[in-house]
Length: 122
Image (cartoon, rainbow, N blue to C red; front, side, top):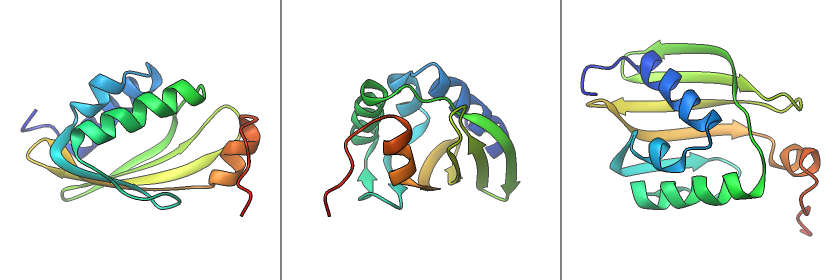
């Protein structure tokens, strides 16, 4: 995948996400990648990212609907929504055809409420 554009990589990321394919998603990441959803602690390394996706897919049925994908040099930017009304965006730094760094912005409290999951007590 070394010559894939950020846009094409994110389109493939969305496809695998919507299949709830944790293994396939993990393969898009660099072995030392960092996935930082800003409302949580950063997840470091492909294997930890794989486990994060497995846990998330086991917790809630999630669907990513693309609003837009933009690219700027090695960066891909994904603005998304889901069928339940949640919205967010992600910034993906692409290095040699794989995701080196990802930072995502979305409202965790709204996600928990929409999916009927326990709310934080603090």
